[in-house]
Image 1 (cartoon, rainbow, N blue to C red):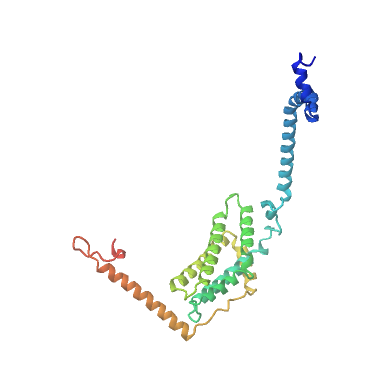
Image 2 (image 1 turned 60 degrees about the vertical axis):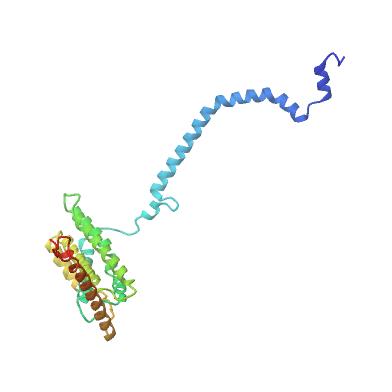
Length: 280
């Protein structure tokens, strides 16, 4: 009877649901499948990792040759021919660029131009982006490679090449800063601009000096037959002259005030040491 069998009575009172019955029937099969998968898991994981690594290596090799999507190598592709075997195809451009900077330096020393006007340096910066100055870095690189090919020194012309690039960057940045002045450009800044242009001219001379004299003479003759654009700078007017004199007067007054303050401050021993510029 059910009374003598309490387990059967409990089972009869609460029958198993379908999900519970299915789980009870599939439990042994699930345990066997888990054991089988656990045996195969290490090998499958290793093979998957190997496939991922192999695919990553293939992708890296392809991108190194072709350049990946928005990758750095995509922008490193050579787009122009940097042939440096024919020296006379690019050396005259260096001499023409040198003449262009010499013309700028001559204009900076000419008192008829108003270099207190920031627009003057914006115009000079535009000249740097016009022929022949626009391609000077390419011609410098080709000249450096030509010198290397004719020398046994692998570092030949490296110092001269880097010096010109640094001088070009400093001059261009100086023109950018001065072109954004809201007021008159100080005379000291104009002198700095002159020194920067002179540094470019001297650096070009140092690089060209590594080329044989015969090649230099031919390149100079070719460059002398060509023309280059000159900057149309603003001329001085009466108002700009008065503004320059006012600015100079302010600077003189400020310097005199600083000097008087330095002279008027005695030391603790009662000895006047003057300003800091007079102390050895």
